[in-house]
Length: 409
Image 1 (tube, rainbow, N blue to C red):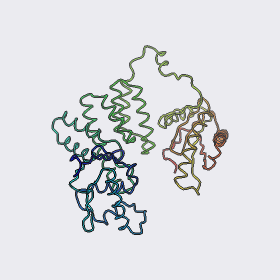
Image 2: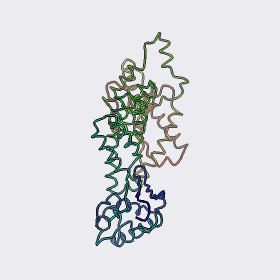
Image 3: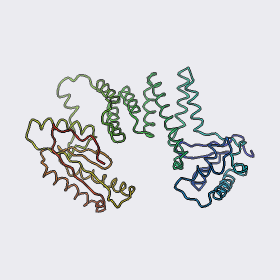
């Protein structure tokens, strides 16, 4: 090595960056996704010589057509060498053998993902919990997000990303158990809040978060965590009932309230300030309101309807275009629902392309008028929303029939 002997330190989590004697190399100054792919593939597999075919099959996606792949790789390897020399200075970074290439073993590499895994393995073997906790904290501190997100279209990068994500969640839970055991709830809250920013559909993480906030007497935040968890888990995983979350919720309710002195104290706690317009809520709350309304209607002759608003792309749209148009129309429709419906009406987002409404004192004919008015308001705000197909499904609220449990395709 012609430069310092510390080698190249490379960050892979949350983005790519290589540092060599205080000089930084990243996607921006490397100037090419293909060069990033090739560089990181050579680094990850630096302990062995790689055949030309192996490299070609690994850095070009399956749907990328290359007329002369051997020639293309030779040209790409030349460009990578020149780029490394331009940024880091002269050196034999990549060695050429007969029909193969290899990273120069005399240039040390320090990878955050490898250090991450090493710390975890050490922590698992540690018999002293305090020492294990420190190693787990160091490992968690290294994880800053997806593995090489800029090149995750490569199958090997996708595979490693899944591997490290799974490892990270396991470490968070192991560390979370240690924090619970030692009553370090502030640390637990921060730990799982960060973890949820990387994976927001893990039920156990929400349980940790709710318990941490409950123990810290942050009751309103704990209740907010529970509602977020129910909504996200139902939307992402399609799970309507979750025993684990409900168990934590029951404990939360048990500690959240002491005995009231009188009914006025209870009223002050539950009364809503300045109620206006539709009651917009998460789907779990909507479902409970439906159960109540269905029971009430069993004892009266009052009309009440439920409406499902579904948005679909046109048959001529590509999937990407349809999803983009639906997302925009859903945002506008939510505003229309909030502005147009009455106090006493209830609304919730049922899926990424659906809203569900409860309309008290409203028969089926009037419900159609309400739905058509919402669609008209949507088009009045933005004519481009006419590119989305909108369907209205309406039915009576009745205790004899169950609420929708399966999302429409």
